[in-house]
Length: 360
Image (cartoon, rainbow, N blue to C red):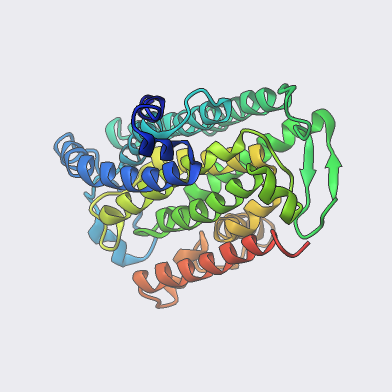
């Protein structure tokens, strides 16, 4: 909104012409979202403490976590507010993809908010019933999938692109809708499962947001897309600004969520950010790349799946505890060491995802 006003005056003051560039606004989005998080964070954290919105810690996990009892949760509100306000300032609100991203972020964040509310305010340890929670996630993903599939201006709306290959494009037809549901819902819950120790999930989200900034900018720029032989998706370049806002909000929230955490993001943050990453992948046709850049999220999810399947089939556990970050804690790794090492792997995977642009 502000960007439109400022750019509209570039005839009167030529330096304002800089607002036409996505890269400039993306940089502003990083800084703005980070500052907003740092500014509104303390106030929201204090409010959460006053109304006793605090996390209950499982007693069957690492015993070092018990001291975290009473730490405020639902801090994801800080992240979502920072991204939303930043996009209102520097995003092109006339771009349909921006609104789809906002619907995903706020929609999945809203589902997480209800779940958190039932757990910490109503003292219902199970929160939303599983079929209510997944039903709402699937319904929202279905809406997003249909909106994208019905877009007549996107010639690749039902295409699956395979990285490392120039022309491996698979036409999925209407099956792309359930496929997009799988990607979005899976991504949302993967981030949710990863959010178990201080700063782990939000740090990985920041890494993924940075990698996606580059991927999205290239696929939304006709010249770069042609040079690197990737799909050119008209209008998606504006999502670079959204990725910048996500990165900035992640950095700002990490200030409060780093070990030892002053606040947890809760389901409102993890489901919202996971849903946004999944939606971003569907819009930009980077669904397979998402499994690389978000490889830690995938590993965390698979560790839970394998653990549950093994216990039900054999009565034995593969890991000492799932998700897998708790397994390493119980093996003796300090929480901060698990976090940093997982971040290192996340950075390596992000670099590998960027390599898909050139290795074709």
